[in-house]
Length: 187
Image (cartoon, rainbow, N blue to C red; front, side, top):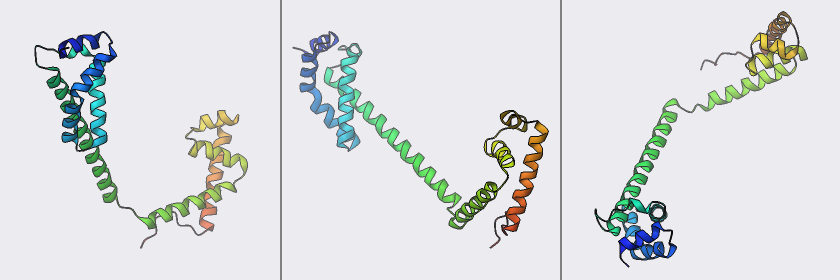
């Protein structure tokens, strides 16, 4: 059976025709993909994709333009090059992100300071009266406006504003009493 007849049979969903095409051409397709990619697993993926494409779209093969082998090899080469490009692009993106992270600097002192500050603020918020704490949590941690906080709590907007203002004053006093300078320490 000719390659052209095999493709016609594949178009009629004849599995044995695909198996025969695979038997005839898989070795060459795999070898090309492996040569281009230098990776066994990726070459196997390309091989599978090429024959899956043949199974799903046999009409793409045009016997007037060349043999089935050359068609399959062209498909394999194109897919392998696509994989190389995407891998190269991914690698460059990761290197760029790593460089940006390194340039931004990893400051252990700053991270420890931030964690300490966050811990102290959580402790100070925890000792606020319930109404003040709830209003502050909704406004500052929940991202709600004063009006939304008032609606959520079922209280007048003026009351909510007063509780937030009073709670923030208590927080400032508590953090100042804890001798916590809220600015980054000068070295």
